Length: 229
Image (cartoon, rainbow, N blue to C red; front, side, top):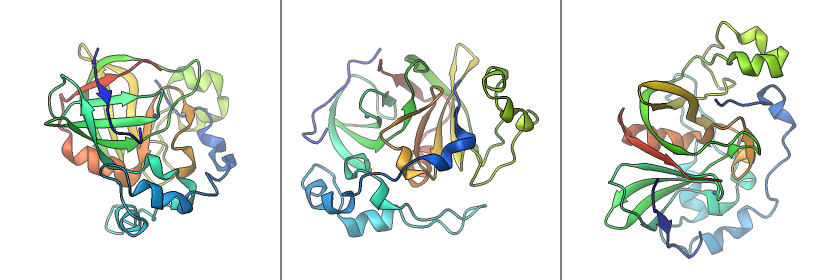
């Protein structure tokens, strides 16, 4: 396990149980946009104008990606560079479910930090893994265990086609241990209201714009450390 520790002062098989009812999520913090002035004071924080650019639409994708509704995201979960003390090598991904963050270690005591959604109580997993494969606009197939819990997911037993409504979204990193797929992923979501919440069956979700950034920097065999929740 990693001994990683963030020192920034502003310092959060799984699948998506409830993905069929995800439209029921309430909007995020009503004060989200107003808090941007505070976010700009932290190491690597961004202004509202910068956030609108970073989290703007991505029209050239296979399925055009809409802009993030920033009013539904607490600014502390937006991408930023932070001080992060760890012995892990540059490039390592560290997931911190307790605080709803994912870090990519950049070296020299810094990391890129992304806000995340994580597994809900009873579905969290921790340990060391690695990226066994990665995919753009993947097909999603619910595992048998999920179909038993949610029979309505059986309609996708043969695979749900790629698209904006696919629970895996535009990019997915698949976590492996000892050559075997763990059934856990780091995936992309277009649902900003889920960031900073425990909503899945153990997988970890980033805003699509953040996941595209992390995905591009992450080769197969990258080490992943998931800290205890």
